[in-house]
Length: 285
Image (cartoon, rainbow, N blue to C red; front, side, top):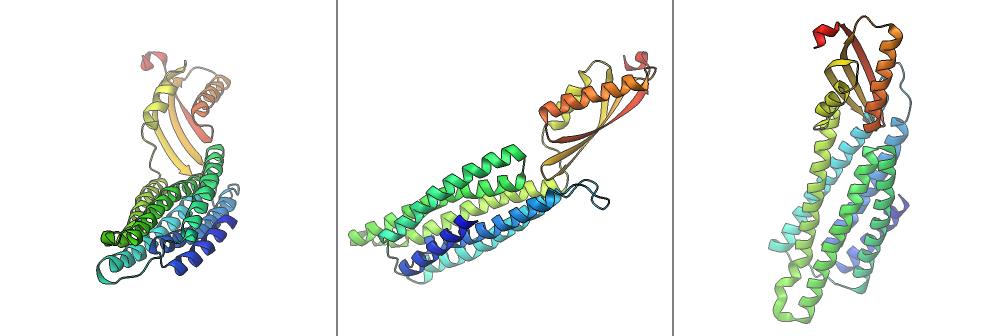
């Protein structure tokens, strides 16, 4: 969050002083990164609260809502960037000064974004947090968009030296369009994942994996009615099994414990509910 504050201020000052739309686009992106980081921080604090009588599956969906809000913010910024870039390319001329400060601010941005994206990715993997992963993804794409802005500034500098290459003066606005395209691509991907989580869409291939795993355990004759529900870093799984109806309750309970352990080997953050149903052995054959 502190890095986002510093980068946003730095980019605004340099962007305004040089007239670079590419840097101003990056400043807007960094400002949204700050808002997104604050929202993510608050969302994780709320989602970490334990389940209660009004939120029986916990508060993990708050992470998905924060990611959706973050996506809408990014898309709104892209609309402004595209509008301004098209104006500069076709309708008005704005002199861009490719000064040394313009290159310094973008190089600084790349270094900071690289370091904080690595930290966030490690934390996201450790805590299985979609919100942290979303932030890490944004910062990693910031590295590419900053590189595009630097390339645009280099083209502007070349146009200053070689007057016959005057068309390169528009490179900064084109770079801003590329930045917007990168942000839109990342935002759409994040938005799709967020909607899928809010709609409780099952991860691809997980149904077949769990069915095969459970049915491979001795004592399980059939596995059916498998259901998933994600909530923040946790995934809730309901499984129905057919097992020997003549065995003791203790034996059936031990079997469910084995199934839970086997599923959690693949999904450490899973909360599993197993419903055993009686079945005679000849019916399961």
